[in-house]
Length: 330
Image (cartoon, rainbow, N blue to C red):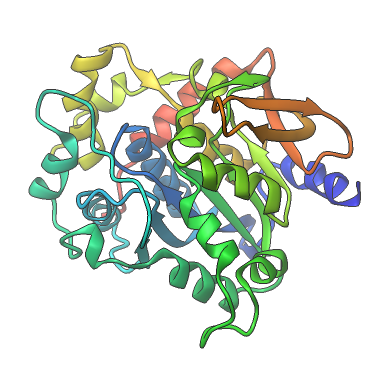
């Protein structure tokens, strides 16, 4: 119960404290993405860089839960465009999922690294995401790191199962318990349903939901589905902008008026908090391995929390769109 009182206090602030930079409270964050199947990950990474440029977040690392060979090059190209080519990059190793974009026109996953500079040539060249997690977490103060997952939970399962090594004498679970403030995850369909990120690696999802040692906040499918962005991004006057290029390629194949904002909303909430756009409901998320349906049980003693829309949630679309249109400093 004490954990959730703390969680509420943290999330209702406009930004959560990691370190102070002038008058801006900065969040230390690791972004775990399945960059590839959908392009809201591109929008989410743009939001992350915009908030980094405003001093609200420090990007500790970006890792891919997708083994698609274009995934990390796409991440690298976006980071490079936003003048952060040295952000540590990692990818899932061993068992994992490789999923490409489903768009039938030019695949943005190929177009983006073909058009924009990057250094990592393939996802398999990237460092093991577990090593990235362990090294970054080990270097940070206790209870200081926010992890955002906008994809499969494979990397987090692998982290929890990792043992002591040359980086830290702690197990992965103990390291997460010591260093992570909270996990914010785009996962689940509430109060019940099937959701892509959960079912793609359902074994990992169930394991993390049950075993993760810190509070988890879920931004469910039904949240991002109601927040439409991308039209202004696709039409903006910004030549050679990878975010614009991806949305300009993909929106005509989906909906020229915009695309759902699952991952962007998750990133924004992780950094700026829930207020005033969402309420929090505490409970427990479980998933059935037989039918892949996730179930939500509200309870004040649950170790999870989920976002619930309120009357002004619609305002968040403009905030996200403006952040997606952010240009790097000259």
